[in-house]
Amino acid sequence: MPGHSTDRRKCVYVIGAGFSAGLGYPLTSDLLFRLWEKLDNDLRRDLLRVVKFHHPGFNAKQFTSYPNIEELLSEMLINEKLFKASRQYNGKFTIENLINLQRDLLLSIGNWFHELSEDIDWNPKSDDWLHDFKSRVEDENAAVISFNWDLILDKLLFGDELGKNCYRLESSDGGPVLLKPHGSLNWFEHETGQHIKDEKRVKIYHGENNNSVYTFLPYRAPVSKNKRVYTPLIVPPVHLKQFDKPIFTKLWQDTVSVISTAKKVVFLGYSMPATDLHVQFIMRCAFHNQMEGVLEEGGTRAPSTGVAPVIIVNPDQSAAKRIAAVTGPKHKCRWVSSPVNDWVARKA
Image (cartoon, rainbow, N blue to C red):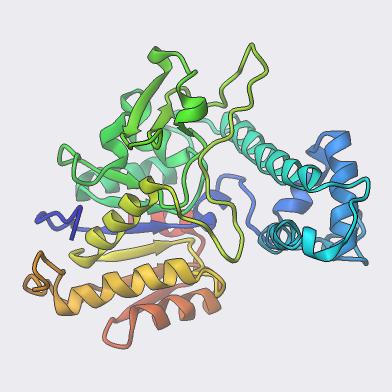
């Protein structure tokens, strides 16, 4: 399998929104509610029309009327795909308006996440559980698979040493590696990444036909003097996600590879959404390989490394059940009904 490493990781951590929630970041369920008043007035006005179209009972002052951000973005995507099929003539609201609205909403989320990061005290003496987690990852030479866009783990694990090897399994120098199969707020495709100053970027993926990807080294959003819009390479939280960029093929291969031979797998704040069929498929492949061996060239399989124990840290029992269903009955899953920060602090 491409990207397969013969070095077994002592532990692989699978990170979800529940990890960042311990630092003040939103979950998908409350993201739109918390973001609403932070939106630009024009954006909020335009978004209100779309939200009310899909959710006629929406009331900005009532939390229970807010849709899940994944639900809303999925509805907007369907709206885009069927826009022309839903009308014979164009009105004042065009498909370009809709596309720009989706883009601006995602950019607003990204900018908010950067602001939240600025509020974190990165002094090792504060947020002890966060630095305890860093120490554990380093001691275990762990691989971390994060489905979050934020830069918490990037900054925590690599700081000023952030570079291309941090995100690439086969190029790792033997230390921890961070895989981000849903993209990252500091990743930019060639079209815009080429305009970032050389000293502020590093190429993390070299692709043909302008498919290269750069990481922006400062832990903030790029600022353009030419009013250029820097849209990060992230996979929007929609039901039918798109992974058509070559870098995502490599990232998913690395994800399968590292879990296939892991000695232990720990899910931290990841809920395995029932709608995220992509992750479920990839995880099934990886846990299947633990039992059957990794596929090799010629169709043969490497010797099985055996079933790895699984720990699921999440207050939501339904999330634990979904993960256990995907790993399969031969894997013993232990559910810990604690927030991530409590579990890390206890284990330190």
